[in-house]
Image: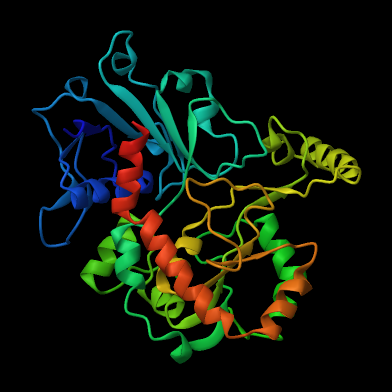
Length: 377
């Protein structure tokens, strides 16, 4: 008997709740019904059809599991970019309740609002972007952005690898202008080397205008103006994509590396101190906020994903990919080694691309995500 599930979602049209979309799609694929606080994520522009449909006759207190997107409590309005916050609904966290409260946290950074003391009331927090070499609260489990039906649909149907353009896409900055330290490092030490082996395509879409197609327009509106059909067409027609994401920090401090990322001049001084200490530490740097949809889109499209060596830099996932089997992970201290390996066997690109797609669909499709969720309960 499957648990009775309730999504405590938000109805604001400018509040993107992508942390619960693939999970709900997975429940549908498994034939498991669920209930929702309000309508969210319209499935077709011409029909009143929603992935999350309001269930006014069902109380979350009557269910076994209540799932919250993190952006129910904390989000930036897509139109005004104003920060919005809500407190925890205290009636849902009373002592003696019969249901479990589960939070999905896809927020950027390392220390998000789910580190706050009141969030220890949750039975489980599914946190994407965790690093095993940094402290996190005990009620957190590693999670990931995964694949939604939208991503799977728009990355399907690409040509055979040999028929794809022999280029690597480097198209950061399409959805936001914020820098990432790992991308800056890759731009300086890896991309110039890669370009001698595989030309770089730096095309960036202009996402400011709504697409004329009504289905594409709906997706553009619901993703905060991040959807682009031409981007997906390029990903599945290219042999490789640069997917570097996140900030590299020294191996110390262990408890809270986010202190190195915020605080202006104080953060700069802390970074200098810990970089000096790192010279005496045999461990490599760590990656914070490593995950991005670009990585999963690339895998699903059957293109080769270039990223950091995830295991080396401390990434933790429910199921880890293997470097040089499912993707190509770069050690930024030795970037030339990867190029030498590619030159020695260029045919391995096709094999890695095929392996990566198969691995991603097997372990991170909506059905796989929902099955993993149920196993944690």
